[in-house]
Amino acid sequence: MATLLADAPVLTQPRPMLRVLACGSVDDGKSTLLGRLIHDAAGLYADQAPVDDDWAGLFDGLEAEREQGITIDVAYRYFATPARKFIVVDTPGHEQYTRNMVTGASNADLAIVLVDATRGVTRQTRRHSRIVRLLGLRRVVLAVNKMDLAGFSADRFAEIVAEYRSFARAVGLPLVDAVPLAAKHGDNVAGPSAAMPWYDGATLLDLLEAADARRDEGGAFVMPVQSVLRAGQRDRWLAGSVASGAAAAGDAVRVLPGGQRARLARVLHRDCAAAGQAVSVQLADDVDCARGDVLVADGSPAIAADRVTADLIWFGEQPLTPGARYLVKLGHVTAGARVTGVRDVFDPDTGAHGHARAIGANDIATVTVGFDRQLAVTPFEAGPALGGFILIDPATQATVAAGLVRDAGYAADPVLATVYRVEGEERQATTQALHAALDAAGRRPVLVDDDLLAELALPAGDTALGRLVRLLEGTGATPILSLAAPTALGTPYRPGDPLTADPDWVI
Image (cartoon, rainbow, N blue to C red):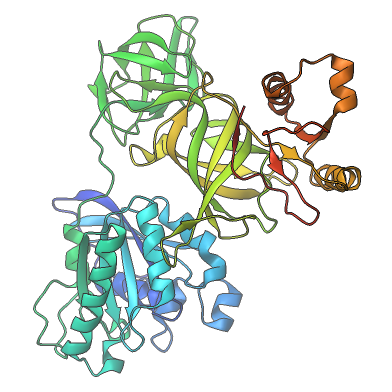
């Protein structure tokens, strides 16, 4: 039986659980800090005690991590103090593992951004901070670590804090608490530091215990339906976790994406269904509601949409191919999806949005994603439960991207089509090369040339041609326009161009 090295805390007036992310540049001491924090705040079991003060060993569990002394994968640990419960998330600092950092940050309430006092604010510090902001976090604790290696200098601490706060305000992180640390020795982690008498602020643990959770559990009622349960011949219960708001028997709700209206008849074993609770509810009206549907109150930001504009963080080793087929998992629904166009690419180092001809691993781009049916969605800022999604490669079942919904469109909106146009004297050879490249990429190319238009007896002009292109694109094909007459449709393609279409073409 494991023996606890310190007494287990007793929760007296618990606050909501806080999910804490640790991020920053490589070798800033994230794993060491979190290991020391858990030891000093809650105690470790005897079989977890560090060897030679290797606090990082509590989080770096992979053999490659121990050999290299770096964090590669995301590690989660739970601990509790008398004030509240915590889940702490240790994320890698290397740029090549940005996707792992994004995974860890996706459900965090607060971010600890570490800075090595001897190096100061680095490129990766700024990169991770911008991603934290992109994922909707507003509160950051700036942990200036390794103060012992900087001579416990108050001036050095003030210099780093001033630089970071100036940067943080510019990127939309107005709430920054700063604390000087020597994590390996426990200075200002859970107790004050005798080596830094000039600092009379809160310790890191004090800041975490007092912090507000990021997600607003108020607002309108939203409950994704996870399963439908039967009790006898007549009773049907809808089970799921409430994402926001609260509802009680008698309250009016809508079922998305269908839009049916109903009233709640009962909430099983509860007075109401409130945010954060896993509940079973029964509807008073006989309406169609299945797994993947969402119960929402009037005034909820959730809508039914078959297309969204989203910030996409690309995980795949192969570049994003606009027009290729993927699976989207949003809430409890898995459906077909296609990235119909790339609007721009976000540079997390500078914060600039610019043009890109290809989207590779760890790139962040604003894209248009179309679904093969309407889904219940919200902007990510309004609710992560229906505002975040992943894209899956249907062939390998690998997760290739994470998306954050920024805006949603309806089926009645113009269709954004990925179309290529081939022109010039070498049109035939270029067309054949493009057709082969699209076919190899699984894009289902369809040639639209003068012979096809004559066979279809299509009226001249871009209006009729646009209808044909829209029909083809809607079936998942990628049209190639190789015509003698000039047209404004599509993106000109030249030999050697990557398989992308920028900008989106409204048909």
